Amino acid sequence: MGGMFLALVFVMPGQHAFVLAQESADEIESDISKLEKKLKKETQELDALKQDLNQIDSSLTSTQQLIQRTQNLLNQTEQTIGQKEREIANLEQQLVLERHVLSGLIQEMYFNGSIPLPEVILSSNDFLGLFQENDSLFSTQEKMQGVIQDISEMRAKITDEKISLEDVKKDHETLLQIKSRQKQVLVAEKIETEDDLEDQQATIAELQSKLQELKGDLNKLLGKSYDAKNIKDAIQFAASKTGIREGFLFGMLSVESRLGASVGGCDYKQSKMSAYRLGIFKEIANELDYDYKKLKVSCPPKSYKGTGGAMGAAQFMADTWKGYKSTIASRTGHNPPDPWNLTDGVVAMASKLANDGGAKGGNTTIKSPCTGKKVSVKWETYASMRYLGWSCFALNNYAKTIQSLSGNYKNL
View 1: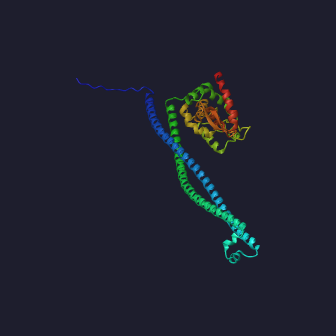
View 2: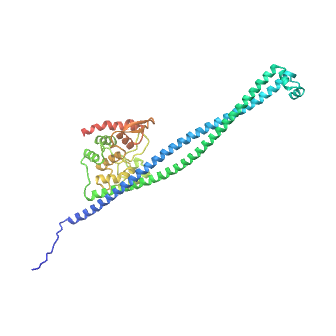
View 3: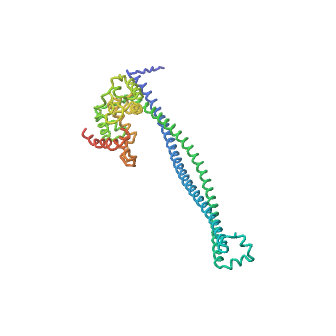
């Protein structure tokens, strides 16, 4: 007896939507995986370009130093040649003088200078006997002839030295030409590598932005958004996502916004924000369905020249927020993220601090904005200085205040 079974599939309410969501999530995860692989490859290429640039810089520095040394040697050689030329000129003048003195002495001793030397020679039957008749004259003549010979020999020697120095000068000039051409090649290579490096950084930034957006979409799709219950909860959540020390984050929030309690008392007009930032500020408000005219931001500072416009607990300016938007969304699951949302704001602050090395242990070396000298500071100090703006106040006051307040986190 033959038969056929009819299989019926019953779909529970909401199951279809769940299946579609799961399929979309799988697709996004696949895209994330592909992007992460591509990002890793591009990052490796970026590191290779940085190594190439470092090698070029090193070669360029060595070449420039050699050019400088060669130029110095060339200058010294030219100065020495000039000195030798002056010595030769002086010796030639001395020769003329010695001969003139000798001639005058002969005339003076025999004829009191009234008869020219040629006539003295012609009037004498024996010129050698002329000198022998007077031992003093002969002795003087002999000495002066010796001086003349010494001067001639010295002139020949200095002339040889000058010729040798000119050969050395030619060698220096040839080396200088070679190294100058090498420098030109290295400069061209550096410019090309810097352009490639810039393109590579732009590619990586674009990939990172897409990756963060995909992660944000995935969190939103799977319902993985997070809303902190209070400031302590927000600090713990942000610290877990970025690696920033909780006490450090507490200190930063205490100084910037009194732990999110003081986020500004001015509207966009009173803040005197720039037209550029106002445009981005309007975009943020529009995306969040806020009336930008009613939103509160920081007021212009009274103690120094600047504008207001900082938003929320993190006190981010509109353009800075835009740069971290995708990163915040990927970590909180809020897409778009909200500067006035406590979770988004604290995560934004922690993300920027981490991006500037705030999660690293130990110290780094910086050029002090106060003295211009190199000093060793904690990575947290460096990150907080970047957060406020590079200044002497940031180093000696702002960063120190944050560190002193960080210990109060345990009492929160």
